[in-house]
Image 1 (spheres, rainbow, N blue to C red):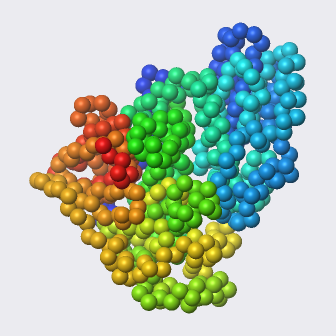
Image 2 (cartoon, rainbow, N blue to C red):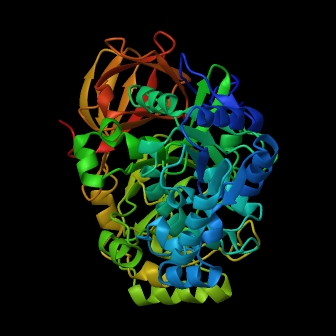
Image 3 (cartoon, helix red, strand yellow):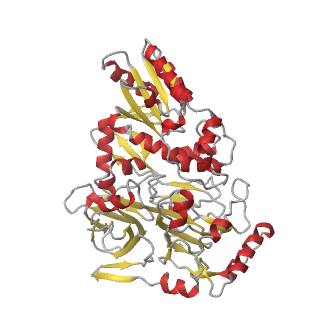
Length: 586
């Protein structure tokens, strides 16, 4: 018997793809550079092509390909004008901090990473070149005033992480052998923030968009196709491309349910609904291209998020869905998330990581650790947590409520509440987006998969624990049963009760008949939490029917308005959980 209670094979789609009809793409360096060269030849004057890249792009591969396929071109790496490592480190030191995990969000513009004298020298060099020229690198567009063609070369954030884990260093610091957490920190707090600001300013003048995710297989589309792809995506339900990762506490549920390969020891995480990290996958007549899902948020924010949500958060997707698998695994770390004022003052983030645990599945012994036990002595708890760092022992259940968890339970976890999922639980985590701000208090004496101690942040943690959130408070404020909001023949809608301190609202629908929804002017994020398959349709045929499978997260942009979800099989009962930003509906 499978974990789903069925012998049916998994139908979870790990490569959701958006078909863009009537379009074409070019794949491989020969086609890509041939198309770029042909377009440049049609422009007046001596060709000067700019390929402005995202940090992490393999510039050596690009240069080799250009030397082969653009033999008449002078090749200039704009990054030769960058600050040297010492100057860059001095500029960024207060944003990177000495902490292994946490930094401060960088406010920099990319030109600040360049040496003014070197950049001016590069511009002078370009003015004297008397042959076709290709200028490439992160910031290449800053070196050329009026390029013949501008190509934006992009890279998904998860692919950057793969490369960092494989030994690639961060931008211009030569830290390939450094701890992956420190390399990720530099990306998260500095490089990716600056890179997104920079590329946002390039899109309006872009001629081509270049996907550089797959080594040796770049994919190129023209600007019209790029714009058409975004317009299509924001007009219909869609899924991002999920990624799965092992962890020290990881389980085995996702391996079966999501049809994952056997190589990893476990799968702990699945990011399926985190646009800042995930990508979109497009099909142009059989040629596949991936781009960061963040591009949709940056370039279509009002149509995607809705006017009120955009006014509140800016061009940032505020809701995150991910899966946490401890089935046949171990407990998550005992943790707390920062209060809003703390995350603003210490890390430069606008809002914090309120969250909730929705139980997709649970073993008979599953628990969620939530809130302090009544009459817990603050100093004793903090002393025992500090001692645990050397003794490797801590009695979590002496201090924290271990609450039995059952399938379809939903636990609200506002920031400041001590918590974690126990073993043998399959959690759909529904939370606000700032997803790395977890202050571990106790990690059950484990090392990370890299063999290093997992970072614990007691000083941050003790500054954010809300000590009044004890057993009684949790029972009163976080464990309210679902409230039935409406029902009829074959359907029932419930409010699953996220705490009033959280900005995310959730609704669960049980149904065996078609159920009508409306975005009401704000983005909706949903997951099929019960049933094998459901179909999302437009009452006015504004988009093609969209099929979703068990445990898949999907996004319905604000501009979609009305939509209907029905079971794929007549009469089968299914269920969805839907999240949206509270107070932004029309």
